[in-house]
Image (cartoon, rainbow, N blue to C red; front, side):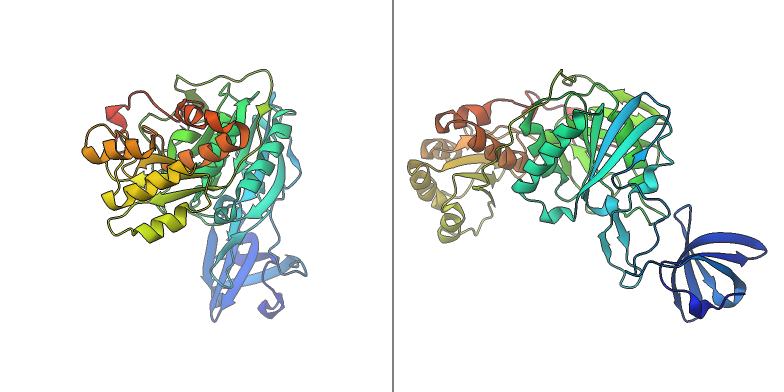
Length: 421
């Protein structure tokens, strides 16, 4: 028998417990407890004196990283299916792992966990970034758009692994940059890393891959429909939002129903949606000189003017129908006279901005505010970057008010308020 003192973090081992032999990755040994990750993704924590170490199958690499049980980066999952989907990994929890030495979750390039989930689709994979989503920038959106275009030029659809916290921003930015596309673009993330037994990464990735084989010619976000592992919802990127910090079904379609579902190997798309086109047309310019201000009752004139200063456009998240305090109206008037575009959205998310109901709203119209109806604030932010980057200044207001990708809905569905079951 091998001595436990010879085993280091990340080594592949064979051990016996209660007369049965197992294989897994050694995580750590704390006092009398040994923790091993099995090939099915579950961790076993057992009393050291109750298990026998049979042999070390493979020692950990010298850099201390755990030996991946499957590796997919820049590789292919070969299947007999006719559909080919490209997978671009940017990082995020779905492409992360738990560091059992510190308890922290860190980016990882091991995304091979999906290989057993898709038997009827050929998947090619490439890691194009390896960061957590809070580090995403407009420059990375531009780079991402180019990689997605290249992927669609050689496959039937593209899925993007992305952290959930800023996924709505990224997916919306890609949606505006693509005026036409030959296949679905599906963003997908997870709330728990793939090496955790309770991870939602497996089902989310499976659903996203199959949704990327359809005729959906838009950008969507695929995540759990409810708390169980029964189905996945696809939300239109420009109408979606993360609404919970940790639940599997954190994402919601705001003001409209989901545009698709995946369950038991089958995808169901729910019209209306734009169908795939014959070529990939993108405008990759973005102007990042846009800010977003969340109005609150004690927001001072000085703070407001500081946030507006040197910006070409400002998105305000106003209260209710789209209001701010009267003390800010002179500053708004001056900023719009100087050429800054100031646009109004609502903190309520559901419902529409309407500046014609109360006197404050009418004063804001006179001050030069551009109301954006029921456009979501973060969608308005990236849309303003897109419009500034690709259209003449005199077209700005017209383009912001035009419904380009389904970001504005003519009539919200009453039954969708509150989300899925």
